[in-house]
Length: 421
Image (cartoon, rainbow, N blue to C red; front, side, top):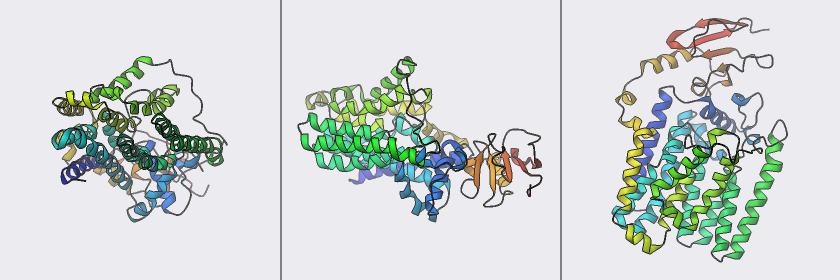
């Protein structure tokens, strides 16, 4: 990796980390999903199961989604037990994914043009949305997929499969993408490796969805299997596809590598959850390396004709879009000023002792998950779980069975009126 590529990666990491960490310090992260993932990683770090009380009593995260790769976070979290640890690791992984994309771009367009495309990738809307929205396991998938795609583009088939294989441990939908990589190898005439990759990915996917996830799930089932919304929300879905291709000047469609985006788009557009359909949140992060590497894998004659304008145009699109994306916060003076309201909230929460059982709302939960057992308010307290404390930001005069302790800093704290009951 050249010094210039390294400098770009460091700059991207710094930007992602600053956006995510300042957002958390300003109490703008959420129980879903930063709090949930911290609870799971905290469980691994304590040499236990990845339980997530925010999703319910005894909920095992591997019964929700299959992401055992999160175990890799346990050692660093044990040393630095904080949600900020997860945010910084995510920033580092997303920035790392720029290495293969930029390296390939430099090979196609030279140093200046390649760095421009690498920056455009790093500033692309899918990557920014992931960097700015809490923590998610897909941050592991993005660099793995980027390195695998570089291998495919350079015709290094074994390297591509080696980088793709760990995707099976990131999330249960990614075996489909690994199988698609195998299909691409078959198209390229690498029958033996391609068919082995397809077989391994399909087998692993079936094992995960039919056996492993149900084994950890309290209902004994995989709860995300249903879907029938392919023809629903078509305008939003078309917008997502257009936005995916726009940063590449639509050149991505000139490479068969773009077909590797189909598995992810298929499950998202088939799902009944409208959050999956559009460009918000983190769902498109895994697609960004696919479309950018597909662009760089377009026919050489076509890339030669685009050499003068494509890098500048891609970067201009990315920079312009940043005006409405998470990295815009870096240009907001309020991001860098001390936030008295956030400081007051954190001060009020210090009244809750370590290891307490707490019911907290969406914004307060990730402020407490590093040191308390946290459930989600208003679903708790209930007849099943009666936490010792309740912490909410919304104005509230009473919670049945609890007495009000304080409303300092905008946080309303309640403690059980009769803890022995």
